[in-house]
Image (cartoon, rainbow, N blue to C red; front, side, top):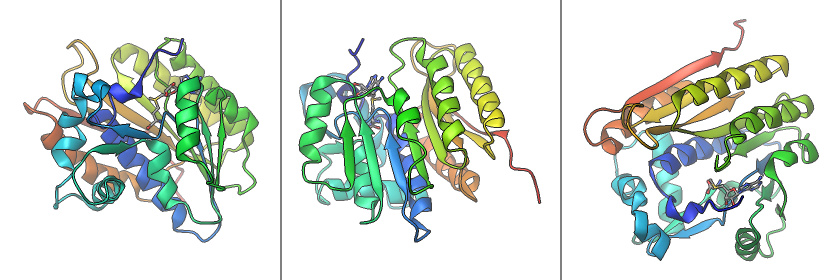
Amino acid sequence: MLSYRHAFHAGNFADVLKHMVLVTLIQSLRRKETPFFYLDTHAGIGSYDLQAAMARKTAEWQAGIGVIWQAGDAPPVVADYLAQVRAFNGEGELRRYPGSPLLVRPLLRDKDRMRLCELHPRDIEQLQQVFQGERRAQLAREDGFAALKSALPPPQRRGLVLIDPPYEVKTDYQTVADALQQGLKRFATGMYAVWYPVVDRAQIERMLRRIRDVAADGGAKSVLVVEQCLRPDEQMGMSGSGMVVINPPWQFDEQMRAALDWLLPRLSEDGQGVNRLQWLMAEAAG
Ligand SMILES: C[S@@+](CC[C@H](N)C(=O)[O-])C[C@H]1O[C@@H](n2cnc3c(N)ncnc32)[C@H](O)[C@@H]1O
């Protein structure tokens, strides 16, 4: 089943959280001279036209990136992400939104590499056009979950895996943990960031417990949940979204606290939102 179209949702509040985390993690990898590897298991099409029919139909971006893109008072990690979005628009009006592959691309150095997986035949074609001639990127029409086996460990021995499935099928919640288990077996020191929607709270808590267990068994050092809900869970639909980050960099939790605190009053209309920053597994002291 490949009916999910990210073009309906590009730039919404969930993308804001996901992409702010993504840019922050990539920036942390750039702090060291040694090359890194980026694996995007569910890459999408890379560039989203905010004036196209799909984006106009839901207008989700207007309540997400549309609210904050011009802000001048954002904390550093949000400002950094916003700068990427503005640069993608040539510093002009907000007309296009960069998906994960195109947020990372400008941050790659000559020595860094990325692998982008996308299963939808039309989406991978679009992505291939966007990345034509880009020698640092390897694109594949393959199951992104399987790439945690086939593409890891990377020769660089440092890097980030973004896992951003559509959760169209309920088994995705279990498959994420299974795939992480495979990834950690091969690359326990890597950073992993898993996006999830908060639609069914019980299901999310089950997934988070599984991820914590898999991370602990797989030799990961730490696991942090970064979540923002804009409405109470009891309401219909997606009340919020989160990112589970395995092996986050130093001080990432503090950066995320400042970011979430700044974003919440701007993205949640009626003050009913709530942030969650929780270590599922903390690094042992010493
Ligand atoms: C949420 S979107 C990705 C958005 C993208 N990561 C971003 O942040 O811009 C999920 C994408 O995964 C693709 N997809 C669905 N199942 C997949 C699978 N098993 N492996 C790879 N891609 C898949 C869908 O076609 C869709 O484009």
